[in-house]
Image (cartoon, rainbow over all chains, first blue to last red; front, side):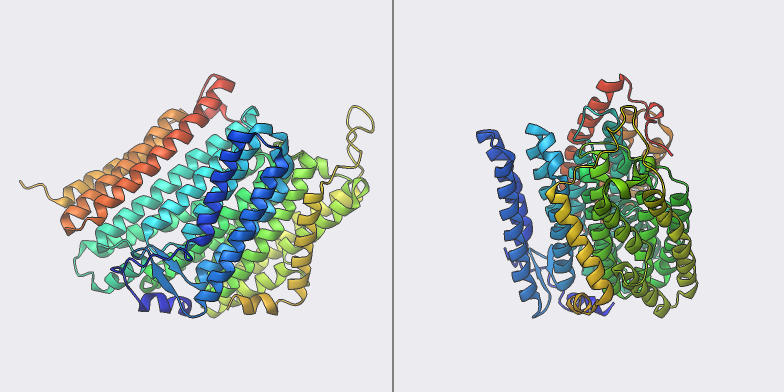
Length: 494
Length: 101
């Protein structure tokens, strides 16, 4: 809660305050996306050219984000007529989104190459959605948050269906689009009601108006607005009971891009949720706290139970994502946002790495990943099986991995916030969760590979591209290093 | 009887509920999509009514942003629906059942 006090202290909606540094990473990503599309149209280059553009875009954007990080150490500032805020919260979100975009593009690169001429569009969409989600984490105005949400989400709808010849990918895109737009409409109706109730669209302005709501109807309108805004964002982060789309979409989308789709939306969704709850509706914490705690409890329980029953790797990861959304919400209701950031940072890396393995097994543009494909993986590719094992152990919260420190953090946060029952629920669900993570390890290490019709065809070693090797190596390094020695990351997060 | 901003907001709430209900009940992708558009239009009505009542321009400005977003959604959404229709010659949600479990 104290993280945001500097922002509330300087409500300054009148000043224009143009600062290109505050939106630097977004500008560079959007420019990079436009450049890729133009170069692709005019010169039809090989994919290595696109790789060069993407690499320099990401490096430049990261450099700008570092400059921004340096600037916000002196205090949070608000720019563009109160639309954009530059504070450490926004900068962490941008760093994380850049990391997710970089890892996601590395995993997606074989897919980009298979897509041929359409590949450049996929790359541009990844960059654009990252820019949109950055606007969302840096938005100081509900309209800005909505626009960022839509820029990011609409790009993701297209990415879900980018292999449009595949009937399954089509279906995933349509489901994602319909339920995603439904969630966006709910969110923006909440924004409209918040405006009707308080006369403000800026996050800090709403907070300033809340104590003064004297008219009888208005507290009701504001409560409805809050509920709608929270519901819309919970859809995006796949918290139960708003998670129904996630398993279908993850299962049907091209394997190469699912990791990015799953993680980017979660980073931005949780960041925006935390910011809106604590900046705008901080004085209503008694109202949303228990509701969000209930959602967190339902998410961890339902996500864990459903994951146990799955027979498809991607559906399993989707339901485990529902459970993880519950753990992250546990941290948010507790109020220690540093723990939430730590959990998010290590979780998204593990998830992208797990989906990287999925993309190797299913093929870069493949849809569906039955668990049978993972039988005997240790014999076919010990490296892949080992990497997936580390990621699954980290996702399950095994000590000596970063996942354990993350869980410890969010549980401490919730315990400190007075939600002891939620911590107990989370602990029980974590222990139950070991079951389905370990089931995959049993499949990989203790069962024989399923033979295809042509003997020896499918049992051959899966081809692991250098990109995926790099992603797995980075993910393993992050997971184990921060699992044993988390202090540097925790200090960095404030 | 004077029609105040409250009436417009009530109408908007009713429209929103009709849209949300249509989204949940309708089985045709195109009709579901139209329901979402109805929800977005009820948002616009709320913004305008509230802006009029509060005497601030923010509400009317917000409408433009919502309109632009709705237009972008139409472009992408219709493309996806057309693509689905081409591969199945039906856009009914009941037939979209490859993915389940």
